[in-house]
Image (cartoon, rainbow, N blue to C red):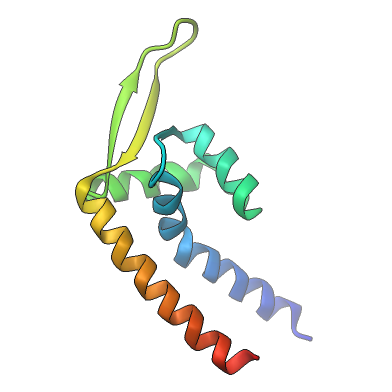
Length: 111
C-alpha cells in the first residue's frame, strides 16, 4: 500500500470538504471559532488549527454564506459568533443535495 498517496488523498478530501462540513455545523446553531473547532473534532474526528479555520470563515463571510457578530462576555474578552445567512442556508441545501448524489454514486461503485 502506498501510504504517502493515501495520506495526500485524505488531506485533499479534508481540505475540499471543510467548508461544506462547517456550513453543516452552523446550520443548527451559532458558534464562536474555538467552539467550532471542538464541535468539528467531536463530530468528525477532524482536527484543524485556528490558522486554517479563521481564513476559511472569512472566505465564507466574503461569499455571503455566514454572518458574524461580537458578543460580550460577563468575564473575559468578547467572542465572535458565526451563523449561516439566508444565502448560506440555500447554498447548503444545494451542497447537501449534490453530496447525497455523489455519495450514492460512490456507493454504487465501491460495494
